[in-house]
Picture 1 (tube, rainbow over the protein chains, first blue to last red):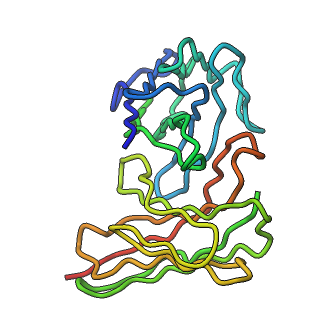
Picture 2 (picture 1 turned 120 degrees about the horizontal axis):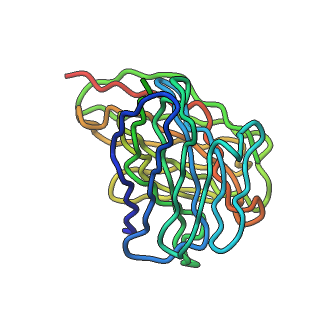
Length: 118
Length: 112
């Protein structure tokens, strides 16, 4: 199946710093990628939809100036958490959908990035 | 997007069959039903998808009644490694801008 990678797998940073997380589709091109956040023992919450070559679409309640998304190519989307604070500590997961018609509803998820803000 | 309702948790034993039912009363005509599995600190993994009747693959079966207002994921002969959270998602993601909205999921614990 299609593979999506994330880097880094975990990161610890000081409060006030910015952290960039990369999401790559390794064997397919993805015009659309998605970013989720997951707190312990909770479900995944969609943060934003990342569109290649255009601005990301953010879900209600997600601050676009705090969570900067860039989708510079068909295989790479980045999420930058700016001026991170302890409440931003979470598990961030990206996903991408390959351009296949047979299973057009299928999305492939990355392994996630654990962010801890001290 | 159709809202889904699943049991919060289920316990089972190795070798047993586990059936998880998901309710989606307001499913739309073009909606598909998809199940994902998630282990701790990992991204979700696609298990199975269906539109109606029964779908079977190498890991699970999906049963969908004629009215499509519910679906049941069946995991045959579970092992300890099947302990995970299972999510039921319903939607026509082309129409919804390709967004996947996760519900609460069902936490399955397989005991020895």
